[in-house]
Length: 321
Image (cartoon, rainbow, N blue to C red):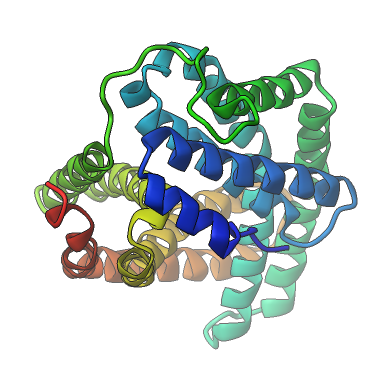
């Protein structure tokens, strides 16, 4: 399953209008469609469906957080933001199990130092099989809940209120400041400044624990910046495409780092289980150390990758601020 894109004609129309509410409307409409498609895929237990659903909910939430206040819609958007965050958290365990199961099994196959790899495989598979069943039940319970049903209806109402289905600025929308395309660019510049601050603080961390938390904060800021760029893509499609392409490298570093942090936590949980052999515990310890090394390697790349990503994104606000 892949994220849908707006038709080229629709992008050109919105770019010509340069109306901030149009950018938000287009983006939310697309992500609500992705959310609905992923919902069905999750219920069918299709591969990557949990990931697609989390991504759609996170994109919609980030767009609301970033742009609704400037349109005078902060109060209306806040309940949606809270419910989208709740949905993402209810899906997170199932996605985490998918990613970490694949990751740790791959690490076992790559390692020549494990004294008894078959015992480690068995122990890992036993742990994640149990975790996967519990996590899927939790995810499905969320999708069957009244809160989720209310969220879907509220999202549709919010998007409908942006245009009233007419393609014109709605009369009933809450009064907003004189928002312009330049305001959107300034918002993006402010987000970039926040990410810079967070990246720059990483080098001052006094421990791995503090460093991990600081990089996690930088990762959250980077995601929000990426989604903000996606929202205003019709303003400058080619520049945005180049910026997003370069941003992928930065996010890959952040993603691999975070996966190594979560992997270490999972490995500790597996080791803590009783009635397992010393050989499998020793093997899990080797994998744990490897994840530490991966985290250190990605942390060392963080600053340079951010500088490259920021340089690629800078034309999106320089020409408009």
